[in-house]
Length: 137
Image (cartoon, one colour):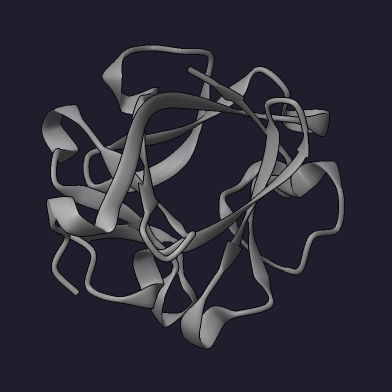
């Protein structure tokens, strides 16, 4: 699926701070990888949250990883060049103001973006604060 202006409804610059035991760490991209960063060190912690026309969202990188998207395709967490399909699309679930989680689509349906145990991975469903993010714009 090629990303075009027609299927992006809104785009917002966001930071995603882990909650629970990992509070103070942020979802980060750098050197072609996805990881937790202690604090905000630069543009690696900034994502563009794109709301797609199918009520899904995509997380686009900026800076050196410009054009790459957070992907859950092939049951792993990585950066994909563009939106290739459902592997780069997420369901954003709002738990309370500015607190969200991200569920997978496609072959990884039933999995949720997790930072539990101080690592980035795909958890079987929403288990608690290990899958909760504070969204800051």
